[in-house]
Length: 199
Image (tube, rainbow, N blue to C red; front, side, top):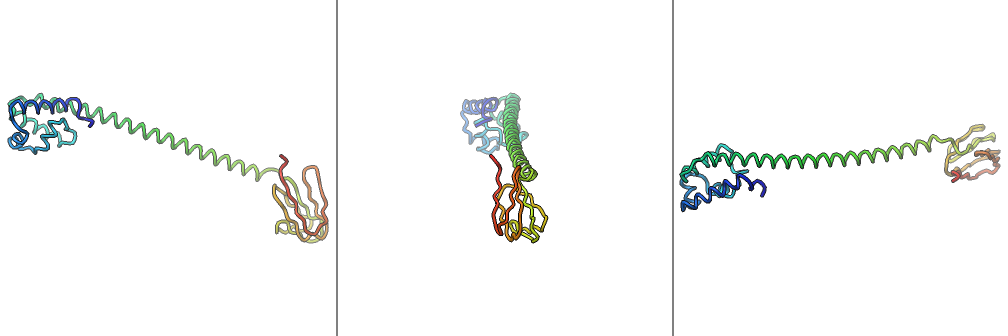
């Protein structure tokens, strides 16, 4: 377990060794200094991290030192040095977590940038298709209304043709279909025109 190395471990070993030299059990010390047995056990294991608030722990150490007949200042100094070691460890862990957050943020930003670029590409592609010069034109040369893909085209009206299929219905005169460089006059009543890009 982290935090059990260094000064706190040394302190715990020292407490246990001094207690055993005096032939005392942990239960006897617990009763003599009025500190819970489990807390003393943690102290001797060097597990001070979540033991109690520091002022109480220092009080436990003073009482422990009194029963062992030693000066408590060395024990308290080791306890405080343990905090420095744990704080360094905590700072290192926090730094790792911060780096993870930064790395995750960077990954998220890269993904977001990629998605935006993809959307921009698709949008520009669609926009360029919509704004391109038409591939052809259909013009109603007859005296009646015709329908091109169910859209009415009055006499003399024109419709731009893009890539796709166009169904002309109701032609009773002539319809002019013009593409780049070519033109056809069609006299069929119903017909279909297919326009595609030359590839």
